[in-house]
Image 1: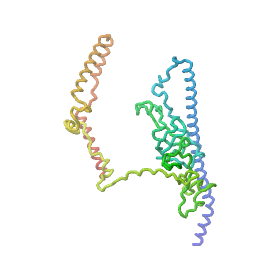
Image 2: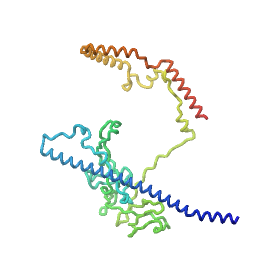
Image 3: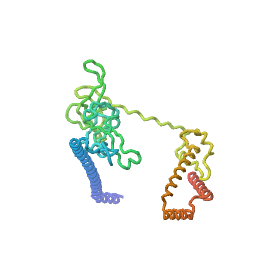
Image 4: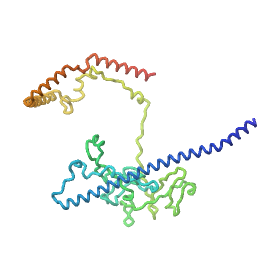
Length: 381
């Protein structure tokens, strides 16, 4: 027994360098993959920033050229809202719609503005307007969207124009965090009345639990308690903490998000598996319901219903119009064209019919019923 134990210990000592080497290789492999992903992300970010710069340079160049032409030509200046830019002139390019990304090294570790806060715009065309932040802070671009402000028309890509049936659409462009200031009701120092106040700066104060060790849990920077940054070394993330106006003891509370509506479940709820089963398949031969039932579901003379009498009247008018056009074309038809039309009509008559008969439809319905029975039997098993 002692020899076996010594043999196992000796073997483990011999395998120790191999284990270390395997761990080192695994760490090197993970580091290589991470560096590769980082380089790819950096290249994509640089390409996007280069595209945005090119779009703005081209826009400035075109604006200077247009201004010069308008100044020199006056009323003879060309119209620029024509041709390919008839419906998109003045709209923002989709590339320039979003703000450029910030390098990860320069990301802000704490954001004093969150969803639901009231903010005022400090610069730009919306300067002085107050709105509510409609979404969370975008860390990669250091921006937030304010509801109802900074709306721009964006030229939609061609693949989106087919679905939206329009060339441009209004969107709310995000503001950079430096262009916004928090608005909060505070008492006036002179009159004592509560009024909206623009807060120029907010600092972060960590929430230290009772009996907690601030030095052990947080990486505390130099300065007073108000300037300590609460970076949790265990979670490796910035804690939200409190918002404090520097030089005062005024804490600005965070806006609480509305709780999601609770989901109610009862004992007699239909299970999802039973709900998703197909229990009705309409036949190809017979209608799924009596044709007169539609009169009970919808008014017979409703404008939202296709009336057969009115449809027949429109069809007769259209037939007269087509007959008139056919007579006009026949008067201008040459003998060679008439012979070609006659040969085409004979070829169409000689071609076999591709419509399904009653027997074929019945066979298809029979196969559908068999498939349904097979699926239901498999579901039971």
